[in-house]
Amino acid sequence: MVMSSCLMRILSKARFFAVAGVTSAFLCHSAFAALPVGAKAPDFTLDAALAGKPMKFSLKQALSKGPVVLYFFPAAFTSGCIIEAHEFADATDEFKKLGAMVVGVTAGNIDRISEFSKVECRDKFAVAADPDAKVAAEYTDQITMNGLPLSDRTSYVIAPDGTILLSFTNRSPELHIQKALEAVKAWKEDHS
Image (tube, rainbow, N blue to C red; front, side):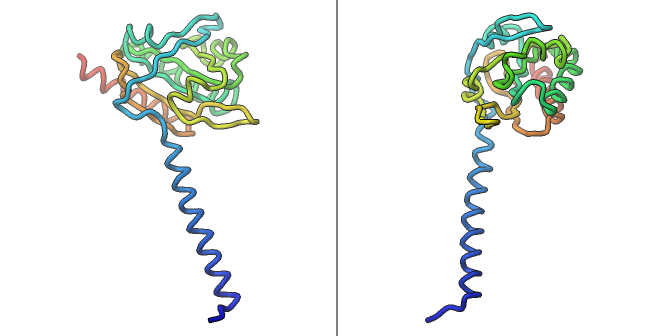
């Protein structure tokens, strides 16, 4: 049986959209590969800065003092990351009242974290350098910018025992603060 060229084009397009649908479903699935709620947070220690001063950030040490709001961001001094840093800086006092500490981690512009911690984080919280996104790879998917691996925009709230209470990946920086505050408040209510 001979098919018309019109019918062949329709079938060819149908195959293309079927493959595209499967591919996009796979890509969407991999975008949610962040560590899930209930998992144990991998421990790490990174070079960091607070208020422009170099320091070491140890997750284990921070958790000994209370919950940690750990957020990964792609690169210091990029528009979305500046917005997110400002929002977290504005909310840092509220997190502290709830007993939580905020720390940002980036694989991008790691040579400028000291300046970023002072200018954009407004001296409110530490920001850590994650060379080659090695820590981010344990926590969340990586994205690539100019051929360099960077962390995706993902926020966690981690309980003092290392259990992940919130795992949230979204490119919109504003939502991260709201979700993190809700998770810390819920933890605080359960432990008061």
